[in-house]
Amino acid sequence: MPSGVLSREFYARPTVEVARGLLGKVLEHDGRRGRILEVEAYLPHADLAAHAARGLTPRTRVLYGPPGHAYVFLVYGMHHCLNVVAEPEATPGCVLIRAVEGAGDGPGKLTRAFGVDLRHNGCDLTRGPLKILDAPAPIGAIEVTPRIGITASRDLPLRFVLLTENVRKCQ
DNA sequence: GTCACGATTTGT
DNA sequence: CAAATCGTGACG
Image (cartoon, rainbow, N blue to C red; front, side, top):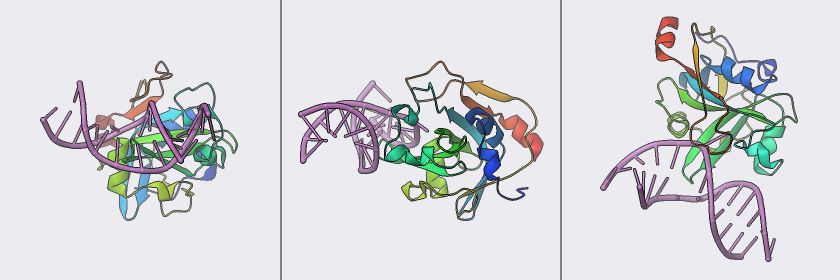
């Protein structure tokens, strides 16, 4: 039961806190809704896998903007990845949404199912049309693993998964 | 301007 | 395991 959009303050926190906090929250766009089940944190500093590791460029501009905005980019020329900008303004941390309930697993499948593409890059998630709604905190443990599909900074435990059995308990 | 590459997915 | 497919960043 979503109860309003997440506030700017929710996003203006350390990236890992935002990542963990996003699990169980509800992504909404164009009439479609689904709880966030899997995320990855991309840190503002000392994270070679993050786009922000190469500094401020035209593409990473939104990462340096205010928190609570969408950072969308195209991978492999065909799949869009949806990220949420975290940390205070000018600190380029973000959280990749890898799985949403009802859209299956995979960042590319999720954006396709929700109709998210490059046009949403820079959108304010607190205003819509693309937004994230608050929801009761999920009960139980969160699985933590290295991130998927990256080579640099493989050692960092920055992938967070809400186990499906815990999700069912919340329904 | 040119070029190699990628936070993926799908099919062989 | 390999192809599909194109925006981005590095270089000149």
